[in-house]
Length: 141
Image (tube, rainbow, N blue to C red):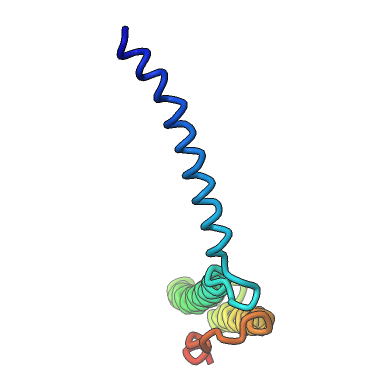
């Protein structure tokens, strides 16, 4: 029973030490916060993550456009095969027309993706001019 009394007596001391330590940590945080003149590294990282998200979006647009163009070639070949087997009444549109439509949709998608990313990067660079140049734009053009 005596040890229980001793534990009860030391508990407030341990609690008080914990409060003092918390206050010291909070005080150190206030001291070590970056000043207004120093840029916050978290903000720079956020800009870089946003920049990389724009890059990934552009790559997704390119991938989708290439899939549309490739799918246009496949459909054109398939319709060409049907026309050879069943004659001129096999399809409503010619294989060439379908191919051109799919290629046009893919190219329009590429143009829109390029326009969207350039506009977004321009707005991002106004807020953070030290971002690296976009390399994916070289591959797309």
